[in-house]
Image 1 (cartoon, rainbow, N blue to C red):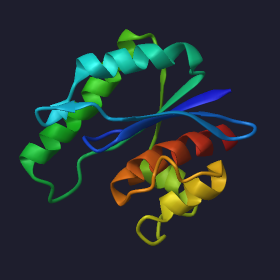
Image 2: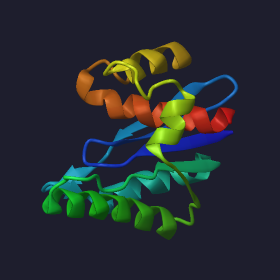
Image 3: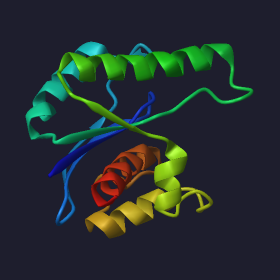
Length: 150
């Protein structure tokens, strides 16, 4: 089966994996234009993935205490755009909280960037997360892998 893990946010990513054995099929950085997710480009990317995706997992993120009003609004807008594009493409969304999948993978209190090391071990490559700025790619891949193994 193929699993699409989505780490929302402007630095987020979409990662399509195959399970048994785990393999990266496609990695896409969240398309951003003018400081916001570009729904047009995201839709094109989703259309290219939807027939190869069996399960779509979206990290169920929420606003945080002491987070600014503007950043909270932008974060919610980003999640909403992703949900709308997935729905428009007839893709059912499975939500998982960051705490749930990270706890299960042993990443809750892990050192920063541990997800990149874990993803490299699990998928046998660091090709897609060589740089620290690509940690969300590793998280999207790990979230999909967690779901595939649950």
